[in-house]
Amino acid sequence: MNAHAAIRPPLTVLLASPRGFCAGVDRAIQIVERAIEKFGAPVYVRHEIVHNRHVVDRLKAMGAIFVEEIDEAPADRPMIFSAHGVPKSVPAAAKAREMLYLDATCPLVSKVHVEAQRHFEAGREIVLIGHAGHPEVIGTMGQLPEGTVTLIETVEDVATWTPKDASNAAFVTQTTLSVDDTTEIIEALRARFPGIAAPHKEDICYATTNRQEAVKHLAEGTDLVLVVGSKNSSNSVRLVEVALKGGAKDARLIDDVTGLDFAWLNGASRVGLTAGASAPEALVQGVIDALSERYEVTVEEVAPALETVTFKLPRILTA
Ligand code: SF4
Image 1 (cartoon, rainbow, N blue to C red):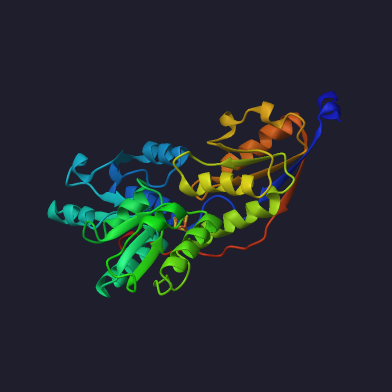
Image 2 (cartoon, rainbow, N blue to C red):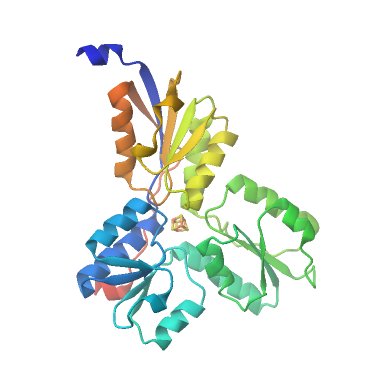
């Protein structure tokens, strides 16, 4: 044992599992990689393919160009839509420009689009529980004519929603919300509109649910929970909130190890560590390595759920 190791204080790192990439993110990244392989660079991507700077920078280096609208790209290059989904007007515009486009929308987001469409066809008034301005919310609302979906963000919003026919309402949700906060909003909706049509199966996706569950298991009594993820990643931000609600004394969102402030660890002996669904595992390992330089780290995995979900790639990329 060297002299430094002898004076390093002990630190238990409770490592959440599952953490990091989900099947939808993995698929979206592979779609960009395979499209570059198949069609050559550049390929264009509408919006960040997933909300993570490291992922975006890596794909840029491979030949992806990120734009916010499709008319920023030439019509003769492939266009990829991000994992968050797009309003119907976007593929329609790509078709009108005769562009080759690939849709990396997560199948679990597409499922919500189908549900919203089904409610609309059944003549129901629809509320979407979600966060204003998030691309997934814009995409889901954009499946239906303007004004036919009302966004609800809080329990308070439920009280002010006045459908024309209260007996014929339905709700859908964003996939990356807080499970507990959404349950409260749904309870409020059900209390006001007892017959409101609900999703067959929870819209909040398995990955969001499992990552929140794992954080809940480790949060109580921890001095600090570190969540690796970007600020615009909805599910990563939710993990910080879940950690604090679950009893962590402190919780912080960091893009990577460079965002780690060791002052947060003063007096800490138990630290939780997880990553949002769009954060690469190498960034988590980077944090463990940095902690190991200053502490005698013991890693304990907290794994309340096992994930085996995978999604198929579009045929054009596998043929
Ligand atoms: Fe799909 Fe959920 Fe991953 Fe979003 S977080 S890409 S909805 S699996």
